[in-house]
Image 1: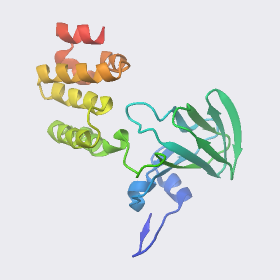
Image 2: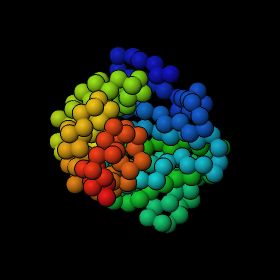
Image 3: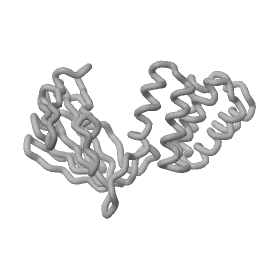
Length: 219
């Protein structure tokens, strides 16, 4: 647990990882420690051979074009960066540009990778995916109105973002607002066509799945 003082906070990454739910634990350092100047998190993987950093880049609709620095603080990992494997024992630092596809697999049990990110030359802001934290909290409670409101708050900070629009469409569908859902989903897909694939299997769109306009949208 974090210890709060007037000028500093202390947290044990191994303890947070072991006390988490499951083998892979995402430790939200920025939120837990109330960091405002940069993004920071850590990932704990209890089992060797399993992902400690999931495959992604920082150019998709949930990202914000951040540069990222990874530090293997415990254990060891194998990073794959644009297809190239890099062995990363404890103490290794890996710096990654936004467009690089990255992934890391734990090479030993109880591996911990710290990550720090931000946009070059700009003040830190939460990326769109992180702005949806409150949305997912409401969603887990099946509070569709609350989830929709949280999406609109996130959209004010990232106008026109495809990921946020997609989740707004989901909530509009769950609330029976079919026309609104179709219009918003269409805007989201126009900005990020890959969301067609998501929508094809997304149960949130059950209420409009038979609508010819939905069928035309997901093609």
